[in-house]
Amino acid sequence: MPATLYISDLDGTLMKSDQTISAFTADAINRLVKQGLHFSYATARSILTASKITANVTAEIPVIVYNGSFIQDSKTHEILYSRFFDKASAGLILRQLLSSGVYPIVYSHSDGREKFSYRRDKLNSGISAFLSERRNDVRNTPVADAAQLPTDGCFYFTCIDSEEKLYPLYRHFKEDFYCVYQKDIYSGEQWLEIMPAKTSKADAVLHLARLLGCTRIVCFGDGKNDIPMFHIADECYAVANADPELKAIATGIIPGNNEDGVAKWLLTYACNQRY
Image 1: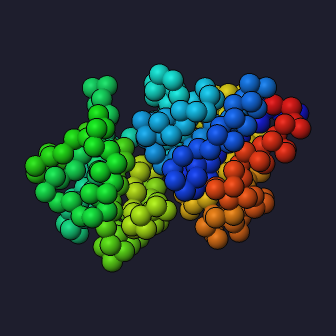
Image 2: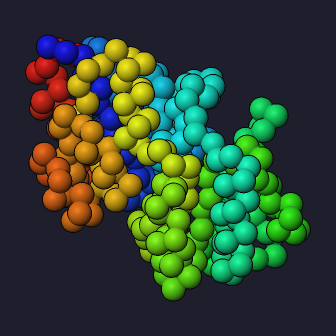
């Protein structure tokens, strides 16, 4: 049997609603990995926030972060694969956002340092809540003026604002860039995330599978940003709490994120297969 890559989304899928991974799920994955299971995750989170949550999971193969923008070594955080905007595209996006009254969080990487930048005097409730969870984050880089927001080494824009402001921008950008437009599952705030064209969990998963020599892909998810990953997988499973659009294209529906659905599926099915 060909080697299989098992890959899961984090928030709303592998993680419980309290933003933790249960001892049951961690123990199940750790035991299966020790037996030879190829398991990783693909998340919209950064490696810094994801690695804190997954500290009790011992899988050591590379992980996919920022919705497929990077594949990084799970231990050293070395970037193994990346998608960046060119300076002109980043500048175009930034100008359009600002002219629409949207003040984004801009992610960039230069001189070996990753940072997220934002106007410190333009914080709405959604951005303030986001920043409050990252008070001591080494990437945190507030700026005083929009001209200080970076366009070099830029790879990700996060916009948290009203639907009235963000939906027209989503329609404007989605033809030329990869965009995720959805509500945050914890706060209910509307988010628009903009990444370079050809960035997605799907492209990153395919690259990771090649890197590991896996020829089959089985994935798990809950949100709209998992749709591209589901389309390229040999099997794809939506948790019970998943978006209806994702459920519609899933191979099957498994128990929800608060019921250890991914771990229970792996224990039932993956352990009966050769890894």
